[in-house]
Image (tube, rainbow, N blue to C red; front, side):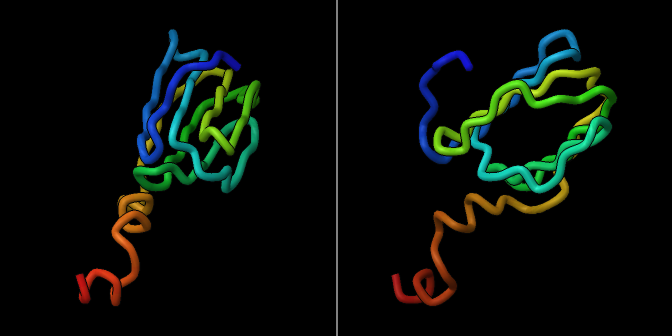
Length: 96
């Protein structure tokens, strides 16, 4: 995987010719098959749909993933889970 600096708590999606996707801010892979990949990112749950998907690089310590295959669509399906984590628990937010 190419090394490039990523700030903690950031999320980025780079699409190359709809055949390769580079993601940063990946917290974990929720599900994966050749037609759909679902990942939890710093900005929420992201579903990528397409065909012939395969993960060519994955480094969860750095939050980076490279996915290859034909990309048809991508969709965020939840609120900003990463931001909620950074804000702290309900009690921590109340007693600031």
